[in-house]
Length: 363
Image 1 (spheres, one colour):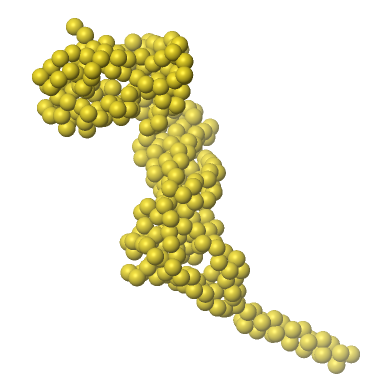
Image 2 (spheres, helix red, strand yellow):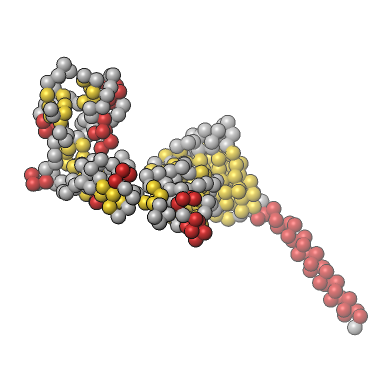
C-alpha cells in the first residue's frame, strides 16, 4: 500500500516538474521579433507598434530601422507612424522564438479625425481628452472648444474614446481612408451630479449663456445675446439671416434659404439652385455650385470672405489674406474687381474707381 502511494506521489511530482520545465522551455517560443526599415520617415516622430497592443512599441532609428520585440506568435498587424503626415498598417505572421525581417515599408498619406466634442446640455468641458483605442494615440487633450486633430492614422477603422471631467466615457467608431480628413462629432452627456450643479457652477461653452431662471446653458435669454437682425425667442436666436450668415438651424435664415453645411466647415444660410433652371438662379455675387448658391469662387474663398468686403485696409495683400481672391484696396476699403452689378453681392454695385471697376456699397 505504502509502495503504491509512494509511486503515485512520485509520478505526480514528476508530472509537475515536467510541466514547469515545459513552460520554461516554451515561453520564449510564444513571442518573436519583427525587424524592418521604412522607406520614408522622420525619426523624431516615427514609431511602430501593434494594432490592439500599443504597449508593444519600437522607435525608429536615424536610418529608418525598427525592432519590435515580444510580439505574440501568429498573425499580427503593425501600426506604423512614419512622419507627421504619413502612416501605414502592415500584416505579418510571427514565428515564436524567431525574428522576421520586413523590408522597404513604404508609408502612405495618413488620415486624420477632426474631433468636435461638446456637452449635450451646453456645459463647458474641462479636461476633455480622446484616445484611439488599441493605438499609441492615448489621452490626447482637446482644446477649450472641444476640438482636436487626431492622427496621423493609417487607413482603417478605429474605436475612439472621449471623456471629460464630470462626463462618463463615450466610445464612437469611425473609419478613415488614405489622406482623408474626417470630421467626427461626439456629444457627451453629463452625469447626474454634474447636471445638478447647474451652469452657474460648471459654466457654459462658447456661444451659450447661463439662464438665471433655470440655471441651464442656452443660446440667449434676451435680444442682446443675439446678432444683428436676430431676436431671442424661447432661449434661441431667431431671425431672417442673410445669405452666408452663420446658422445652426433654419430658424436663423431668411425665406428661400436654409441652414446648410459649408465646404470649408461650419454652416450658413444658403439658397438651393439648379444650374439648368433659370427659375432657381442665384443672387448677384453668387453662383450655383453643387446645387447651392455659394459666393463666386473666382472672387471669394467661401462665405467667410464676404465679411471682408468694405473692411478697412492699407494694401491689396491685406484684402487677399481675408479670402478675397483678387481683392484690391480702394480708398482704404477692401473690394473686388467687377464688370457688371451681377458680380457684386448684397447692396453693392459695380462702379468706376482709380483701380478700375470694383464693387462698392450703394449710396
